[in-house]
Image (tube, rainbow, N blue to C red):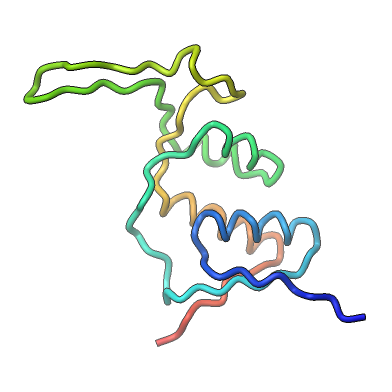
Length: 127
């Protein structure tokens, strides 16, 4: 019987995260990405607490924590004057009670490295 191979389109955080889980579970997986090389731009600047919990089993969370900045709250100002703040203390009921400041480009790089170490790869477009 032929076994289907999961086919993931896009090497962004979600596609790479799914690929890492599949490859680490010994499920052959194809990841294709239309970009020739990884982007240095980021659409996201932070990782949520639940995402850090989910990624623990992949071995990524410790690497991410070592590179990121723990954000425990935000302050808002307008024309230099404070207008409010929101502190996460007591609000985030997770193992990691903060948001981790880490660019999407760095997150994708870490996921891609983990995928490659597990035996997977990203098929990128060529010029």
